[in-house]
Length: 500
Ligand SMILES: Nc1ncnc2c1ncn2[C@@H]1O[C@H](COP(=O)(O)OP(=O)(O)O)[C@@H](O)[C@H]1O
Ligand SMILES: [Mg+2]
Image 1 (spheres, rainbow, N blue to C red):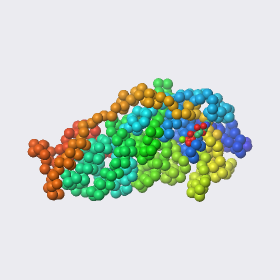
Image 2: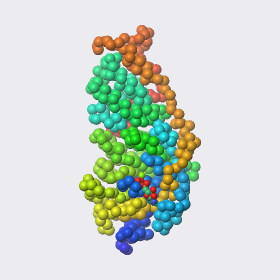
Image 3: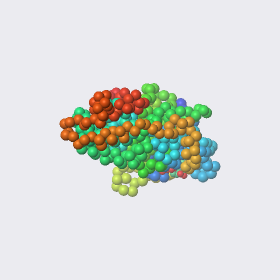
Image 4: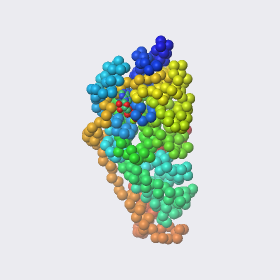
């Protein structure tokens, strides 16, 4: 035992500030002086919280978020089931939380935390987070449309075309109008001009757009655009604000939210300055249901995710992926996650057993545990932990009984009221209504005579035709000078590529 105590206490000791995760366990016995600390200085080296349903992932996220907030670090967390909302309320006086703290021999201090509730486009409760189609960029849009490489490339060409013509793609109606236009007789010349885009692909994209429109895209895409700085705030008392993106109302629309989370991450990467390694991160971003991000992704998309995760470290942002099995995360990403909090994994099927073996191989070897056995047998609210020490060295694996959160482990009440009372509600609460440009373009398409393909569509009024010689420019003229206009199409990921 002595060897265990000393090894763990030494390996996890820190000079600077840290998160207290819990206490070590050996042979089913709690070892009080095996204190398991996660240094704030290595939290920009990212992490993984994994485990089967009901094993304690959300509570681990919650207790880490609380201590980050206490340390003045802002937190962003996707609240997939709504059960993280309890962060805004003090924990219960009895029940599993005080019981756990008593078991650990630690004081239990129920505490409410400063929480900002967000939602995607106002679906469900929370201040609406919106993005314009232009801001989202072709690569992320391709992902959310389940586009293949060809379709993704087509989107990139269309975005560039729209940009050259000054056509701000704000919402999905704009994108639909553009696709419809290019697929029509009126847009034929423009389509040919773009080059490398087939009308068949335009048709496929139009069809896949329907699903996105119904899957929350109508609400999410639009203005005002959410500003990343609003995720990096601290409360008046100095604690970091925890932004909870409430997703329970769109659980049945997974395609959108995983991509929207990636968009936020890409925005953070683009907009934050280089800071190198800090004493503590500026923001920690918890990416829940991470498997959705990687499922069916194209190779280039995965490469972009991998790069973003690798490079965001120097911007002082830590990313923690939360998912069921580590094998949900591609190895190029997994290899960059310094901290591992592995809750129990089940091994029912041969596939499970395989995943378990693979998982064990990604851990340092342990002189104290049989890892395969340990990972399948740790209790609820316990985990198999290894992190990066302040020196950047992986720590020995320790079976950890985690602390309980101080805030409520139940879903909070009054989320809608809290969001309505937030200062951000003034800024983002109401969708910015734009001129119905998309409708105008749709009209153009309708009015275009079924002229021979090589003849440009006849403009409706001579006078108008003099000002603008082609239907798209004509139509787009109405948008010039609008805030929606962006100098460059900077699809987050494309920009990242250019920089490299
Ligand atoms: N650290 C913890 N302290 C006390 N109870 C916990 C802890 N972790 C998990 N539990 C108990 O287990 C339940 C399920 O945990 P949860 O985090 O919701 O699982 P998951 O997110 O993996 O599905 C909690 O509601 C709580 O009762
Ligand atoms: Mg959970």
